Image 1 (cartoon, one colour):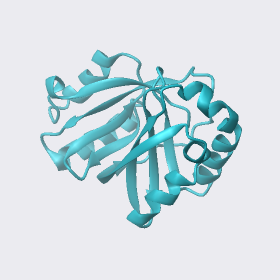
Image 2 (cartoon, helix red, strand yellow; image 1 turned 120 degrees about the vertical axis):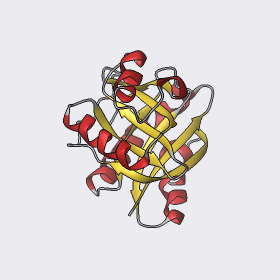
Image 3 (cartoon, one colour; image 1 turned 90 degrees about the vertical axis):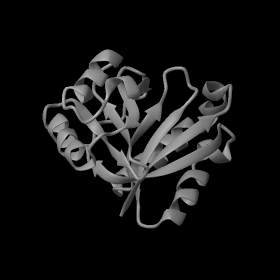
Image 4 (cartoon, helix red, strand yellow; image 1 turned 45 degrees about the vertical axis):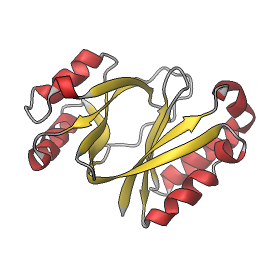
Length: 178
């Protein structure tokens, strides 16, 4: 299995464009999650980005995973960019779907200083209830969803391990839907 982070670019009027397709989109994602294909995802609070994490058997499966989605066929999404993980920390549990924007988190991205040790640190962070899911991408960068709304706290959690330089990572808010 290959785990992919897929960065999705929605249209400018994303909220209105997605609305007619939302029920079908969510039902599809729940089915993919029940089949252990979709790990998690959600949009940015301002609707300018969407992040999805899929578990697929082959790289060619990214295209149908994305382009069969009602948001793609309905024109709410305009492009997507997949990146595969070399190391991934699974979530402890599948959280219920939350559509009202009340479950917020922080995405942190950036380079890692020590690949093997950072993997151990991410597992420890999951055990401490700080990490929802994420890992190290093939290019050596980090993509993690941390269970805080405070960017300084998120970078601090990574920085305290010494395997990330907080000055070299970026943070952004995330509405953790599933």
